[in-house]
Amino acid sequence: MRNCPPIPHWCPCVVLIGLLWNWSCFGNAGNMLNIPTQSFPSPSSQQRVSPSGQSGRSKVALKPGHSLMDWIRFSKSGKDLTGLRGRLIEVSQEELRKHNNRDDCWTCIRGLVYNVTPYMDYHPGGEDELMKAAGIDGTDLFDQVHRWVNYESMLKECLVGRMATTTKAVTPPSSMRPLAPPASVAPPADRDARPRYDWFQTDVSVHLVVYAKRKIPSAGCTSVDLEAGVLRLEALLGKMSYMIHLRLADEVEGNVAVHTAFSVGKIQVSLRKKGKTKWTNLGQPLEFHNTFILKKERAPHYCQGVLVSKTEVNHNTLIFRVKLPPGTIRHVPVGTHVYLKAVVKDAELVRPYTPVDQSLTAAPQHPSEETDLFLMVKVYPDGMFSSYLNGLHVGDRLSVSGPEGAFSLRPLRDVTHLYLLAAGTGLTPMTRLIRLATQEMGHIRKTTLLFFNRREEDILWRGELEQLAADNKRFQVEHILSEPSGGWGGRTGRVDAGLLRDFLVTPEGSRSFACVCGPSAFTDLTVRLLKQHGLRPEELHAFQG
Image 1 (cartoon, one colour):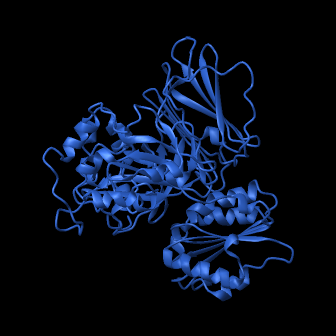
Image 2: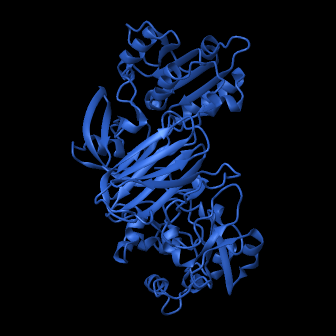
Image 3: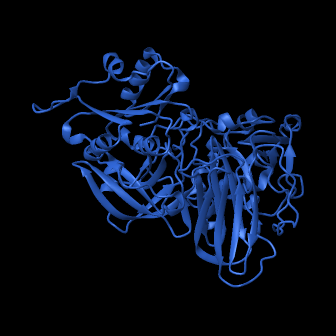
């Protein structure tokens, strides 16, 4: 895991980090944090606040009765901490700027506005530090703190409302009334590109329909989690995320089905009722229900998967097959990854892994049929996390996030020549790209994979790659080894300008695009060489290896 930046003084969540792993003692807030039941962060985690005198942060003495526990009790006392008597409002930039003094202090974090005035005397960094974010958007300051901090739960009683915007988010319902049945007449057409949803029912089932208002990639875009009567649906639409979050009105079976009409951009989630009852409403809106915001502004959401098999790929790489809970479906778009999270040797570790298909040559599954994730894991002798994964047994549980990543298929719409440059397990995001380019994107006339490894035995899926090249004239693979054996007859060396000149040949009038993935040194050098070769920034994508 990357080293974390220093924690700024001002953040209203930082002083409460020490309580995050004990928050489950107070009602159901522990479930909202979506963290393992173990101590979190673990005692040796870099995410813990250092003891006083070691963190470099100046503290002020808190008044009697203003400890961390006192803040928890105070925030749950039922007192109006917003000054709005329970109303949620839409806050303009002008309105936010008005609340910028000690006795009336509002701040904005990722589109949500909080009245932190009641918190002033509880902040060990002092009011001066907290006032740095008074009356302004403090997201950039907050982002210097670890992204896992769940400020929404810690400050939920201070929530004023959402920032007024026309491009980033849809204002959630202003009240917590149950959602009524759909009107008998069609609603007026939206004048913007924001998704909307509707629902209908039969005697035995309930169906929620999302209208994305754009085409959906054939790999799907939907994550659904159904647990204890709570439905969470997230649709990834480019860089944006649309969420439905409801406590359902009545009991349903544990399984869920997702059907996607890709060309028209419609997603239907079907649930089976436990009883033949007529629902008068769909359910109770929960946090961030019916919101449309940048994906990077949502915290990762984890579920507990089960390891069902481990299959050897080569001498140090395995395919982990992970089965998700019955009420969970993950459509992981091409080029995106998931996070695995675990506590290893008293340290919480998080690592990204890009799902692959079960094999490179097997027929692809329709997204609605996908129930398992296949993760290609290279085991490093000194790798704490990969060694931990290697030690897992069938039946053990894994904490798996929803899809993350910024890759978009849009730049490939008019590309004729696709170049993929991968080193080692940098192959993983390329595998689904290869399938997509060779089976679904007929306008891509040639896909070329340059695959860099140290030795011949390190080559992943060599047989499958070469079989695909033999069967499909639109695909070419070239292996390059840096430490070849005496019997190797292929190319040797490392990535350089001469190699790129040999392979990156695009006929006049054609359009090319290149994707790169591997260790950071390989990726940085390759991107630099590709730019020297003439590719523009918009014709390149570097996956984080």
